[in-house]
Length: 211
Image (cartoon, rainbow, N blue to C red):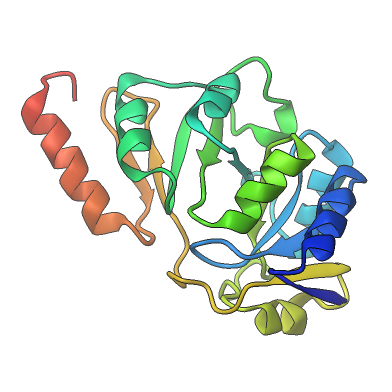
């Protein structure tokens, strides 16, 4: 496994090239280390499921660069827009209704999960590769998520060829997942933002009968 320092510009260019070629890379985020690939490459997405020993019934999360790009892949409700404005970039994954541009291997029924991470490395890779990244935590299913590059190496050294090392994960907890498809928001995973999200939801309910 090749370990690249996050400050290595040529190394980041190599990581971007690997993604566009259909390979899997491990990268840092604001929450935990993740596995990432071109979200529109079905074979690469399937490979992530194989690496993680993950059920294909559990969809991956799409990293996007901004809200405009999110709108290309999802129907953004007023509720989702407010939460995006308040918590993106950051450790909030939003489940929204998928647009027609989202391929079936990135959907869970009619929905898609989106996030803008608060970390320069995945954001740069999304912009450099010009594609949303399909992502999930860098660990075998059922095991704790990796919060450092050495943990990724220990868990997955036989499975992936490249990991970007940016030191320990700032938050060291997975993102909060919130379903924003219905009339009321639902927290699907507590995650790093649980308290703040609950307060934001309560505030929305108090201000508008729509929520």
